[in-house]
Image 1 (cartoon, rainbow over the protein chains, first blue to last red):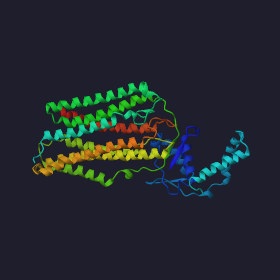
Image 2 (cartoon, each protein chain N blue to C red):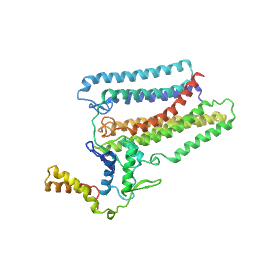
Image 3 (cartoon, rainbow over the protein chains, first blue to last red):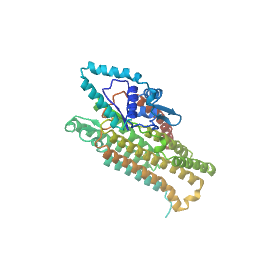
Image 4 (tube, chains in turn green, blue):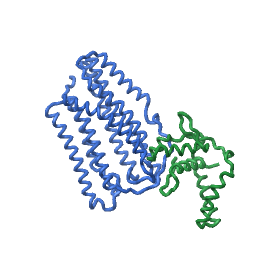
Length: 128
Length: 321
């Protein structure tokens, strides 16, 4: 199972790691109970600072996607879709849609792009 | 059948070590720059037609350096052979291994500095498989090694032999646990995986990692069995009179030496076959700075210096005293 880091991605590295792991959880590739590699291992493999990875893991922990167990490391937590209020998710979606509109895409093209990304997520591992 | 003399053991040791060096030189080192195909020199991407122009000079320089290094090793070996200074042989073996590694590392570093200044940046993949020490190390075998070292010291201390040369057991005892740290470094070491063929790169790195652990295990067992042999000979001189037992203890370390060399050559073949179609490490850059790994490498380098300096000092002292 691999997490991809692109060359042209403008997001900070910790956010790329956080979003990548979330995407794998959403796609069902990382299931509840799966153990993530240690901060030291990830930092060593990527050749980045330990703190960068630690911040990413802490954010995942704060958002409830992973739990840190002493001796076992970071473990994927049970998914609880009811926990997050849908209204909290709408502002970032609106921001992305605004960018699409400002880029000159038609409604049809935006819908196609959203459908494509959604199916990409789902075909990786059967997101529920 | 009689017990081997110090001369015979030394000659046998030299033959074993030199044959390993020669095989490695002819089979792997001579053509190492060409291993990744015509688009690469020592794993560094080079433009088309490189080997028709400057590549010829680079290749000649590489081979001349290798020949000079082997000539230096041959000359330094000829001296103790001519003067029959058999206590120089272990120091020569350790020194030549160090010279070999340092020369090749310097050559690679210098070539990368000159030819591979700005490698292309490519997207990378991160494997989320966890690597635990227990997945690579056998704890019972590690415990057995520690037990053999402890038993060796128990034998040495209870022998009461006033003629024991304490320098060798002390040095061997210092060397052996160092391999444990080297194994941890080997397990933790990894390079970013290019997005293209990430799975193949991962399997390649994993195969090499496991092979490196086997190499280090072979070398560590070689050292531990020598320590045990030295302790046993000091504590139980009667072993020398039982010829088959004597040969068994003299031969055991060399069995591990053979295993060690076999694993080194196996690793070379793995690199050649599994890594044939893959991007060589260092021929591309990652989208982010490589700073933390350097810090981690630095900590291992500091540890390595702390480990190797007393070994070198003891080796020189053993020769000059």
